[in-house]
Length: 283
Image (cartoon, rainbow, N blue to C red; front, side):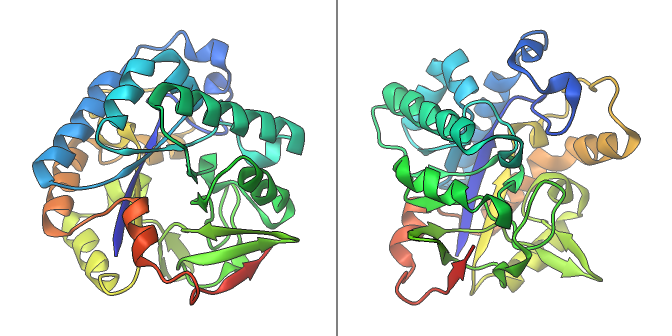
């Protein structure tokens, strides 16, 4: 199965970059989220695709009309309130952030929020308490796990990137981890972000076919498709490359991908997975 998700952020919501870390800083940048979401909604309509949108609470609070528009046809999940890495917060701060984002999204959409993704897949083995908190907040399916070492987090002991039940102490929760290819020890998330933009479409298509009878989770940011976004000042050279490479052709690439392969949302996947047979991963 192929599952499609969108991390609904503004173009400047980069992690580990001091110039764009706080809400006060975000106010000074131009607004591009409307045109970027309209682009995504048009592509989904053209390709008859389903998707789940993980929305930052700040986006919902600032542009509630946009979230209402998305929720008319698509699922909404939480991407936290203020888009901070999990391990940069205390359990108390994280709980306040997650619970506030869920309440905000539910108040705007009138629908229960059942899905969650941590910014940067930033739950590590040392933050197993995060699973306790999101379960306590009413989340039924988590999508925060990177099943390998990763700059912002990762659970290297997770094993194969496949649906599982995460167990932390007495807490259990359904998990849909990010998919990846491992080439010469390098973990390549070809189904989203910089690698999706960088890889030629023939390679994305080839790798997608390898996952056809298994499990593939794709994640796209609105900025991944925005060839007209400004260049942020002060970004290190490598971050510039990761953030801006391949923008020009990404919209066309996503459209081809969704035409060539059928994508579903999380609720459809949830119904198709036999959760009694998936592995249990202890954290």
